[in-house]
Length: 190
Image (tube, rainbow, N blue to C red; front, side):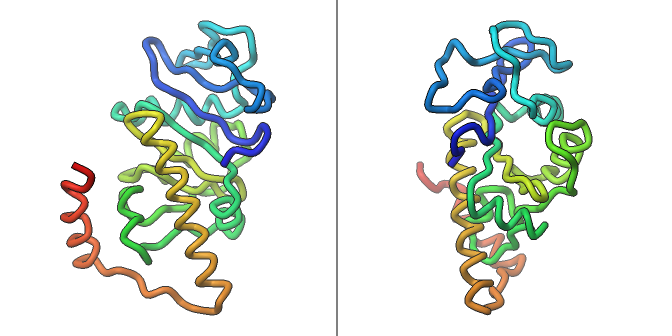
């Protein structure tokens, strides 16, 4: 999902959030390598430099108080779709896990305020977005929920790409069909 050093994640905590460090392969990562950062990017705890995407994490945590964790990946299929600057339309009811259609945020250079701002705009009313020519951002109340959503977004991206590669135009669910599926989701897993 996050090969070698690509992608990053954060978890909200008192005074800011814990974020993965910059440039450290995930296979080598330990709890001691996590960096606690405040919303302005100041390192509160840790001996490593925070991820280059700390601004993105800070912006999402600031804009969305219900979000406890943010997972940003360069997962293969979602990233491929993001490179076409296309979102994931409601061709399958599982887009509801992300809050509906998975939008593709406007392009901006990685690690910038512009990328953070574009991500927050595209996340409005959603739990996941694609970042143009970059990857995916998934959010959740917990790290497990955000990670589960990141996997589902990559799965949906793969299904959508498979349909397009086969020359098929997916039939999109209409508002009524999505509402019915959302009602089914209301007690799903309970």
